Length: 65
Image 1 (cartoon, rainbow, N blue to C red):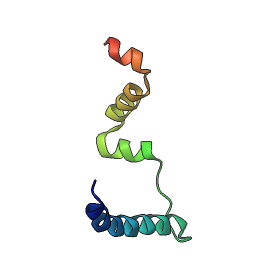
Image 2: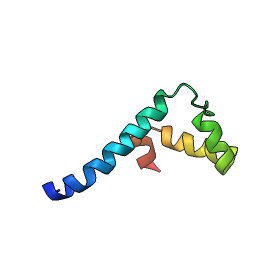
Image 3: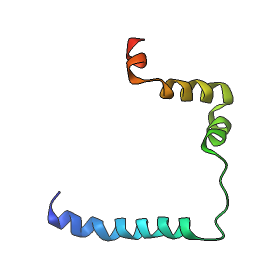
């Protein structure tokens, strides 16, 4: 990445990072449901369970299939 590109991109990225940090530190931040519950709501419990199980397998087991 060239210096000219960094000069253009860095201010926008810095602003976004500051916004993210500010949102995390905000005392009035609404609590989120756990990620698994949100995933189950989005794609269904059965598929979410199978997806999480597949992603939790050690890499060597996944390659054997």
